[in-house]
Image (cartoon, rainbow, N blue to C red; front, side, top):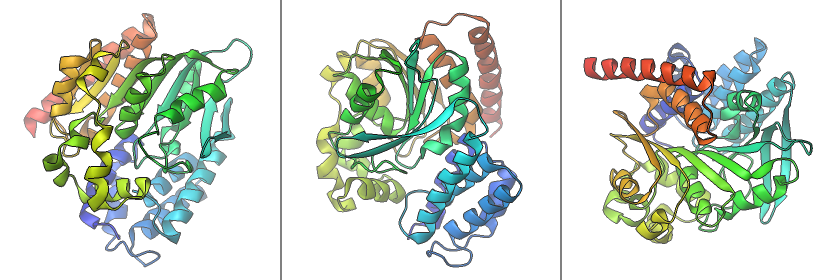
Length: 364
């Protein structure tokens, strides 16, 4: 059973990322008073009911987003398992009406990797954009990027971290190899020698570690990625929210008490970071309660091609969701060297939104 206050707090970032309206999530939250599996008024039951209502209205993408919140933060019983399955089904129904979006299941060493793809082709292979969320984010959360970046001339693959959603692999120190296996599996249908990674939170750490060895990764865009201090600073880890520890425990297969020792050698060293020759675009939240501020200091000191955006917000920058989306889209364009009208328009929109967000921060 999860702590309801933490569920409510950390759900908001994912609701905003999926453009679930405040009125919608506030109405659902008012009906929730427990996290007992299958009980009336429970987390998974009420969010699933809201999702089914969207299905009846024919809004399958919206339904998939609500099912995603219903299984948040991870599957721990029948109700969340059903929500996870229904979320995939609802997203698939939406995807069938979108040209060029396909579901694939790739057999990799140690398990199966399910993906949503767009723009893959053996003829005229396109540069690859690999998209991955964090330890509580399923691939269905990222549907909007599939069509957008396909129209920008990229092949797009959206998938999940080990242990998340339909990814059956275990999350461990060798998990960065998953990304290289994925590139190997796609090499006949995408230009994987020009791969860009949009990886949020813990998958950003995965991408950074992979890029140390796999030179096919040409750039990384991430937000709130743990780098070193999260893993090797026991004092900081002691204050990390329970929901994060419980989720990591679920994904790694070790108890919350064992996590500090288990994760300690996952930290990236200054020497490793200095060896990165690729651009790294990193969004940092100044009041992040999960990732320590020392991560930004380390990146500033050792990553030669760092582009940094800081927001006055908590982990995931839930109150700067529009700014985050625009910044990520522009970062991908810049990594590819795009200088056209769209890049110019994105810069203009981002400037306006950043000004608005700063004014809001001052008023708050």
